[in-house]
Image (tube, rainbow, N blue to C red; front, side):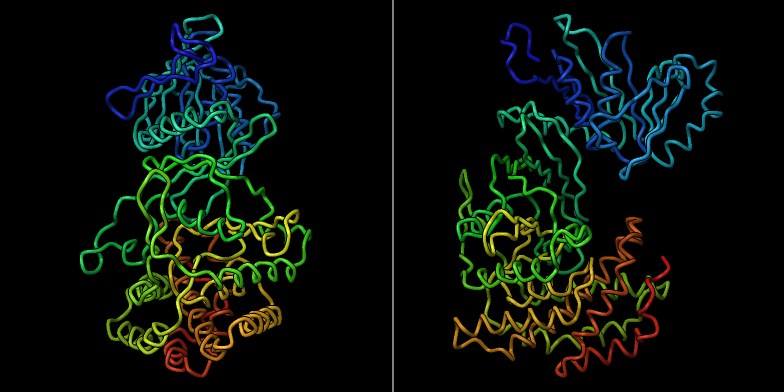
Length: 531
């Protein structure tokens, strides 16, 4: 695909209209058209209408089949034409997709008979020959028009976006620009990867047997101020762009830990091209029975022991200039996180806001805990050190077999935080005896290399931060269900309570235990809230 007069190996060129919701790609061969479809599929969501128009032979079938196969994550899927059936439906874990061909539509009323509104309400619709239904309207609509290019085997593809597709189309265009500069990945196939609960998105790129991960993290706008003129993300010291990921990855790799290599980066637009560790995340290994939980968790504990020996630098230099300063895990961070419980979990179980006096009692119970944690020695806190973010790399040796994925929110704080994140995993059960065994192992190994290591102080920090983290998670999971409609997180809540109760058993957390026993009694903890 090339501009007229340019050599054919030149990457696809783009002509963007002055407004964000239009985009035009010229001189795209069949493979390039399929790649465009795959990239659009990365952004497809429930409630979308995507239309395909163009003359016969313009490439609509190529585009439609590539998009549907990408949604199904099956490059060989049979995609029949809906010319005679008018509609074909496809089920996928991401979105239910209906493929409609309106060429034989006898009238727009027939759309009602086809159940068009239900297809869009419950999933997404891909419509060919949309001009047969000129009154077709939808808030989140992407119109795609294909026409003959400058050569017989080339096409020009024009995109017009409405609603939320405006932002998504702009990201697809920026992604294309980034990959065009990241040779040879401009011609890679793209497959959607399930991400986490954040605004980041991921795709696996494949090219001639090579693989890489594309991370898409646009800079996040500040939310509304909630305290001292600052939004939640600033108070909790969450990464707002990809720079912290790049900086921390560099520091971890230089120390011998298995963070992914960064092949290419555009830190202004928020795209990274990363080493692909594969799909053997710890949770999947447990589910598949391909590795023992004891071996996996022991390896991850060994990686934390290595991390405990590394000082947190004042500054980490960024490629191309600038520095990243690792923020502290201070009282502001810890407090704003636990407030997620009165702000969201309480509302979920009581169907109303928490009374001010009970909220104040809750915060007062944390005062002495936060004060004591502030005196703890500081080290690396990767912050989300648990099974979804750890990949089993059995071809490596020792602690390097634990691949690290999520660390852009890293802080300088108590080393107990990551250990309790691992041993009290929010998404799968860690047996109490395995937790006890690995905590004792960690304490023993730390004492062996540091005679001044205070085991009892660490045990307190472990218990206190376990309660703090699990309190935060209760609030986060309630928020995901109530605000974002992500009900699946609620199934983890009974497990979170079991972990939280383990921490509350520490005698120096009696005030916190008393608050929980009075206001969220044990009889209410066994079932997830009905949201």
